[in-house]
Image (cartoon, rainbow, N blue to C red; front, side, top):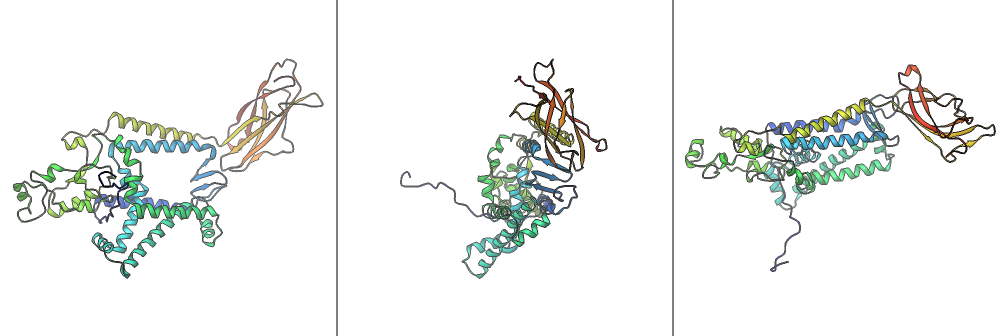
Length: 472
């Protein structure tokens, strides 16, 4: 408090009532939304035959620690693929932002997609922008209670189906569906659905523009990726303001020629561009960090220009240098670097996936004890062999030794060695050998896993060491 006045710590939220608009960018956004919703909500129901695992095209099997993506099976040890995918996503975001600004926010972000649907529900129930404003201002009566209640119930329903669909990715969708609504599903299924339902309801229904303005860090650090050649949604101030500023349609300001004589710009100050903005900004005030580059203000302005018979482009995608009459340069060193990094990372990830070995194995020596002296004079070393079948076929195999003459390999009572699809196996291997006179230290040798010829898989080798009595 200073001088008898106090300052609020937080800005009071001003309700925003986005108005509907038609145009090429709004149509593009509806198309992307339909595609995104179709993939997200329908993909869990797409069946996919497998020898082992959940018969679902995309599924996260936590119990088996596997992720199924059509014919690709991602195991726990392949987690670096996820790291690579995140690196590619980050680099792609930087690349796109350097060229086209915040188009990800305006067209592809989950927050934008779900907010569009929530606003559509609100408009269908409560009416267009003026009707929604009047409804909020009127006292609570039967009409207001019914419309508000129906709006929030539909919001919660969309939030529930969003959370429930996400849960379906973590199990067999048809079976989990029946379990969920019969009350026999695991507790995490209900907890996850409830959590995502509430967060979707709050983020897309109650918070909306505050998420983009205050919560999302991208709105803050995007400026570091912008330059004078980055495409932005901008208002042509010179054309719109003219010499005498913007002016509404009135006597003496109706035709384009009359306005030029009076020095008025092409902006008729209708406010349509402000009314359609989902974050509530006025693009005529210049570039603002709240702008998500959704281009709805472009559609709104183009609609007005078309109705007046004037040229489009008063609000458009452009760059700072283009506004100054210069040529926009997209192929700059920064953008080329981001593009090459994206391509390089993508190629590396694809090569890693394509070149994955369907059969993996590792050997570790059990060192407690390091060796055992047998009654017949032989020395025994014990090893743990881990073999993982990452394929969808049965793999019979044999384990042999190389480089350790006279050694015996014993697996106990195991006679037939084979791996089922997606099976992991641990073998306790005992290697026995008479001490060699010439041996002066640990002797290197190799374990060889040799799949049967009809599997078409190559043999695998892993080095190991054999220790004898009296040597450490």
